Image (cartoon, rainbow, N blue to C red; front, side):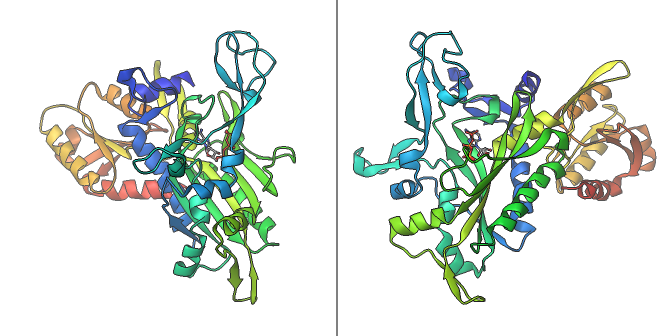
Length: 431
Ligand code: ATP
């Protein structure tokens, strides 16, 4: 874990947030390479669940919603974690994260647990009174439920269908930590899939399988993934069933995503609190019902961390240590890097021309600093799947070498076929 965190800082994937002011708890910023990686994760998710399906549409709802939304959803009343204080060192912990009766930091005595609401409060407008209280959303799901009718009326979607959304959520976590795994501000990727009551169980199965496969298709080792069904004591009061996709992080098996059968709880509550009819008329069956909802709820940051951790590898090549991020090509920040072997004989100009041409199609890096071996290592470390080198022979016959990050094999390809070759190799990979 430490190695991944160091690599992230050193190569500009993730920086500590507000670092020049000493940082702010678990606030983290994505650097130039991290932002590309996370965008690719979100793009891969959107492609899999929206673009490639004909039964899911997208949405982008506001972060600050009407405060009644959070009463209806149950968050004002029940979105709490049990909090304990250490009487000696004053640190606070989530009671369910503390193993014994003593403070995990100093061994001191702990207070009784009390409930702490995780929603961030703010005020809308210039007057800070109770009438203007609002919350930063703790999940994106509610933006979908409150737009259910809008989507039904405007998109001609018929049940079964889903609405997907990617966006920031905020939780005042008592104990954030483990790098990107738990922060107070994070991005969720959520789907609410609406089905006819009675057809919920096969759809729950469908989404469990689909969502598990997504991580495998994007390169995560199957043996470090598992689907863990929730026991009856773990289920939220509104859920009929829930299964977590878990990843074996260096700090243990932990949730990447939850897939829940939320029944008709949310739509019924919003109908009750808003006074609007949120039932659905099924024209084919000539019947009216409140749909059941299957919710696959994933975290963009958590999955980015899993992709990074899973891709990290160290090996020895010809007596030298090599760090390589074996990221799936779809996720890699750069798809290729172009190098002139020498900084003379017109090689840099020729390499620049290739770089400029490829950059119109893919994110590509250019590097002419240091030995060619060092340049390969720099790209291996950030997961660039292909290296293209312009050398003496390129100047004679117009072919460049194409090096594969994982196999480290090299073949010669005519310059004007590089884009085509890269496209074939990138699209040939599953995911
Ligand atoms: P946990 O038990 O770890 O607090 P949760 O079960 O409360 O998580 P959900 O409410 O199911 O989480 O949220 C859905 C997804 O959102 C999680 O699977 C995770 O990927 C992501 N997520 C939730 N909280 C955080 C957080 N504090 N930081 C980063 N990602 C988060």
